[in-house]
Image 1 (cartoon, one colour):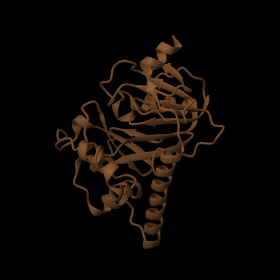
Image 2: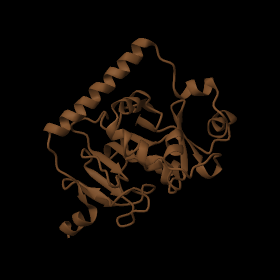
Image 3: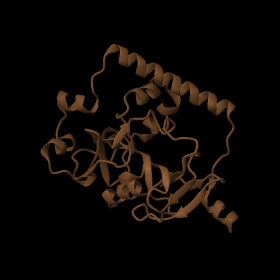
Image 4: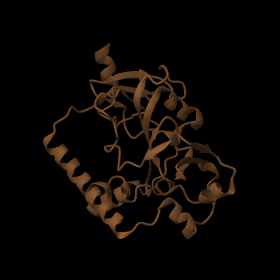
Length: 257
């Protein structure tokens, strides 16, 4: 079940003693993960750069739909920007729930996919009623050819404080951020008109408020101040906490030789 919507992947409820796995970490692995799983070592088609890994991490070459681990072997599973690529999302998610007690899933939202689409993305995803609802992108109406990722991913996210605050206070605008425990409620290509309408029809005010619930002034101020403090904390950590840098996975495998 869904437990919360974190501010971002640096706001996860991972305990100090937790054994953590990351599935499909790509070029941006989480430093907190103990084990990294990647299906593709040399093929960068579905990621932005070469796969990377931190020296302290253990690497496993495996398919996320068939993970070589025991039931509940891990306390926490991280999976960012992967679910939208996979062939069988129900199997992929079931495997994470099998091997881990808790976890975090991050994907582009429907709006995010529209603004910075990727050809390798098979699914458009929304968080509706605490469910991750996946709809096959090939069935979606609209223009998914124009990619504004340079603006929204590579420019504003680094240059604009108001944009950063927007991303943190309106959690589902560009991303689905889904922290879970025990299981993940997932729907793939739903047949119910209620869920299909979010992907195929113009949003009404009722639909908009379902994804972005109205908030009172107190909640709005609290969210904004929390987001601002989160950004400041990250900036301070970047300045004063020096951590190791990830290395190319190819180099890591050569060292392990």
